[in-house]
Image 1 (spheres, rainbow, N blue to C red):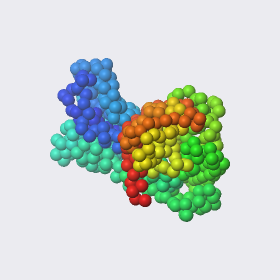
Image 2: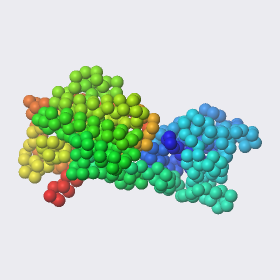
Image 3: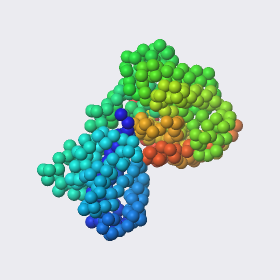
Image 4: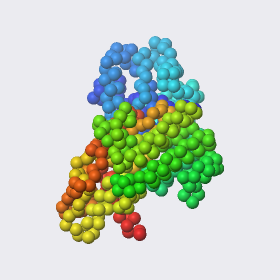
Length: 491
């Protein structure tokens, strides 16, 4: 089955009901509508609006005014991270005898044809009898919301919706449960205890769409092909996420390049090939921003991949990630799988490693400043010049993006996931010092390596799908530091 869609009425369902809404200034989202639409979008569902606008046929306002209203609606929704797949309008009067005025199915048929969804498999949400009758007419699941004219419609015994709810928030919860019963997928999350894996596990635990299965290293050694294939044959997942692998900062990469390339190559090869052998059609693999050239133009887009030399320290790790990306592309071409490589910005958050030999820059800074505060040190010396720019992505924001991508059939190429903003390492150090409470001097050892001068991703593709990073850098650092303190106290 392809992507499922939610068909929504406009006035009284998404927008506050007005008597013949005719001005962009009158456009106002119903309380809770944005939250409900975000939830539906996070389930991977398409969102399309179908609206009867007889005021055009009556000459009360023209097409230009309608388009201005819809632009304003899209602006308000876009600010909430929501992207509509389409808006379809019937401009005719009730007595015109057209085939597109709801509850007639012409408008829905057009949307289904152009967007490629099955009408019977969609959900129809509205506040009026015509919306419910439209859905019932094509065999769709219908939801009546009590907003707008919905409370009145709910009292009419002829309006027979499958579900009657208060608003779009509750509608999204109902649809989530319906989806879970109909489509609950078994998902194997490899690397569930790491930074990204633990964030994915938190995210998926709050959703009923997936039954997530995990395995400790004692159960399956991901470096051993036979063990991986046996585990996949036994667990029979519908989808796989590869969040496992050897990761680390500049120090770890420079000290153990052979381990970084070998272990990541083997894990990717074993899981991707094993997933294919087990009949898994959907897989998420993780690349890294270090796959981009050292001197790549900013922001870094897919067109910049393989256009120049890599940063020397992380080259073995980057080449392993390149191999994983290429494996996914090759299996897709040859076997028709949907194996997608996600290239995230530098990820941080609860679950990160604070080991001095393994840590990435942000977690290393948290530990260094924390120890300076504990030891009452008057200054802290950091590697490099502090001038390189980096983009940071909170792990739970990445997990939300991955959930969206898992449900999308349209994404065929690798995709960047980034916050859209970057900071110099010097700026980052100042924020971390402030969060941790270090008030001493920060010094820089320019004899130490800086790494790539800048790494900011072009994340326009996933942003066009409605996703945005939600977590402010300072807030994310504060959450990460609280987790770090909890781990310190528990040990």
